[in-house]
Image (cartoon, rainbow, N blue to C red; front, side, top):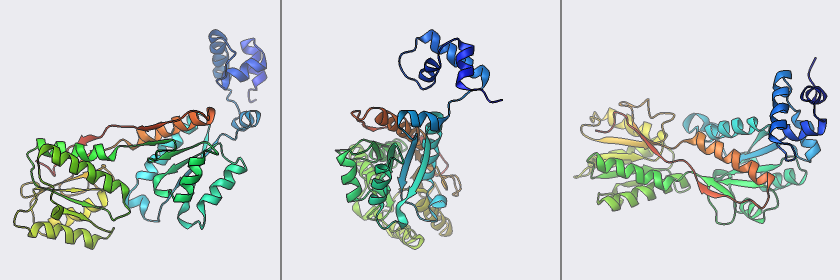
Length: 333
């Protein structure tokens, strides 16, 4: 027979109200009593029903995660999915559920989100920057419902990774390894993460006095042909770069394939380095050195801060989390 809250109260020799407060983390229960209640619940295998708890608090214990994704994205760039998994893990530990809303096929995502919050279908909303539009940002700034942005804005709660710092970390690593002529291949005009990583790389290159000439910077649309043409253009230069920095693994993979096809020896003749270590950094020939940002740490922090915002609407957070690290591969000397 499944244990009830009444069974826990009887075993711990306290009132049902005290059990409810202790299990829901509320005040009004002494530490020794709380410990006795928790032990009783553990012995009986009792866990509070999340829906019942939510109803009593007028909460639904559900969070909405808003993002933008196209069919091939899970395979070419699993960043959002790693992030989602970490958020889900942390929220589950706190007895919250997580629903996902992909805005890519919605005519008016903002109206959908606002309507869901109006109906109190969710306690809060986590918005990834890749799904952010001007009208959705305006709604977040109005602060009508608990929300947090994975990205940056001066007027809303946000948590993010510092991609500029990651770019600087790449410049520092390359300088200390003796590289002096850098080239960069990044995403198209709408790729904000690529732009921030390039900004950091430029700042680091200037600080260390190493070259990142504009002629060695190529922002390509996500096509393999464009990446290949950028690599070939670098190799045709009289003073070819000694290292190619790619803003993501998809660009890296095609760049490494072109170098291999052209029989350019890596890292003896030219090196390459990328950001993040998935999905292709370890599959290139040779495996790539990567500037790694801990996406799972970001996801856990987002979930933690989301719950804080739900519990206290006056609470605010605007912060970077995680420090980039270098995962050394065989693509650099």
